[in-house]
Length: 249
Ligand SMILES: *[C@@H]1O[C@H](CO)[C@@H](O)[C@H](O)[C@H]1NC(C)=O
Ligand SMILES: *[C@@H]1O[C@H](CO)[C@@H](O)[C@H](O)[C@H]1NC(C)=O
Ligand SMILES: *[C@@H]1O[C@H](CO)[C@@H](O)[C@H](O)[C@H]1NC(C)=O
Ligand SMILES: *[C@@H]1O[C@H](CO)[C@@H](O)[C@H](O)[C@H]1NC(C)=O
Ligand SMILES: *[C@@H]1O[C@H](CO)[C@@H](O)[C@H](O)[C@H]1NC(C)=O
Image (cartoon, rainbow, N blue to C red; front, side):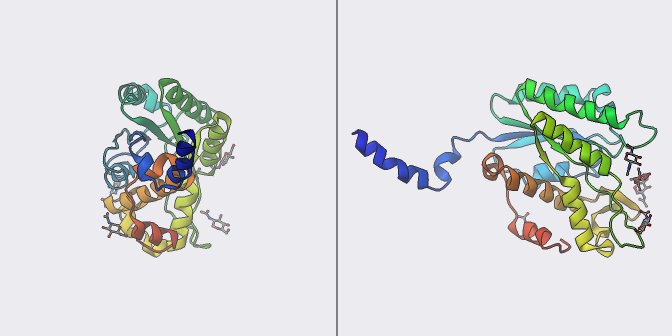
């Protein structure tokens, strides 16, 4: 009997994902961030509506104008943490944390040191509440240097700090700043207009821009953490391939 069971093991191990599929809990996504995550201008809504597989779900807490300081002071962060508690029974709860565009403003009242402390606290509090934090480096702005024809990278401090916090906390992170900068550089300034919220706004995203940059977020997550996200992701192979090829989508 024992021999029979053992001899079955290699077959089970070699079987495709189906056998495990039902053992894996779906994911509840909580998206924390500024306007580049928020509805009407960010990637968050498109992430939930176009990349999340059936049975998984989530809520976009992105808040226009938010810094790591105001997001807590205004009560959004408490809602995120409260939701972790609500959903962790039935889901694996992940919290994406993406800030920087407002923290970087001289008037924000948030120094780079504060930014680092605040991100670290967000990550620790998600873990303590029973969720998994994912630090996300800030989406690039799409302004180009007219001499070099390259994106003006003006969130490099915030990007480096976000990665440093993730490393210190041994937390998940994805480098959206690098991936979005690389993609925007690859397609070039003449191809970015469809992604802009409007003609002059090179920070916020149109609905289609949301779909494209949400796919970049999703692809980064699946590539880096396949055992956690492969099965709970709705793929779009065409769109992923176009992005990977550096072609306008
Ligand atoms: C554009 O690139 C040039 C050449 O590297 C540099 O001197 C200039 O400061 C850049 N301008 C901006 C706005 O980044
Ligand atoms: C970053 O870019 C924004 C939008 O172009 C600009 O307002 C801001 O001054 C820039 N900040 C830095 C530190 O370069
Ligand atoms: C990065 O931070 C340093 C100070 O730590 C500052 O001098 C520099 O202007 C910042 N760069 C950007 C692009 O904000
Ligand atoms: C573009 O969007 C910005 C907000 O991001 C807004 O202030 C501006 O009025 C808009 N412009 C047009 C032409 O819609
Ligand atoms: C996948 O992306 C393509 C653009 O690359 C889009 O036309 C298509 O509608 C998307 N398919 C689905 C099922 O969302």
